Amino acid sequence: MASEVDLGITVLDSKPPTEIKTEKLLDLKMVLQVPTKMKIKAVDDILGQDRIAQTLISLPQNEGICRAFQKELSRRKITWPIGIELNSIDLIETYVANGFGIGLSLELPGQKSLKGVRILPLDDFSPVTIGALWRGQPSSLSQTIVRLLKTRAGKIS
Image (cartoon, rainbow, N blue to C red; front, side, top):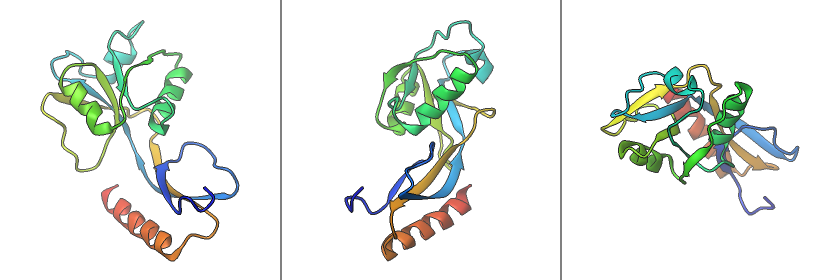
């Protein structure tokens, strides 16, 4: 980071290098977003298939959400590669609403789903941890931002 970035907010899914400090902000549950036109009503209707027929719509493979999901699928000996890779959770839901497949997302407190999208919580998957990270001593501005984010996260989780 070499003074290029003072503070980052990201998925904390692995132990960072020793010079990087982190602070957990909140945990978010992963969910599958399913077009309501599909007859799928439960996560097991998808993950219980011998070979999952539906297209998985997700963030890129290098994103923490995707890594956590694929790690759990691998542990369960389930293969479901990304069929459509997008760079925004909002865009994933739009693709799902238009019937392009099943989306991997996060349960965001207070967020309403688009019309035509059913949310299936991945209750038995580990939640995704969102946190702040920085190198060295954080600036007073960074400390204030982290404190405000923790306060806000505490109100929504």
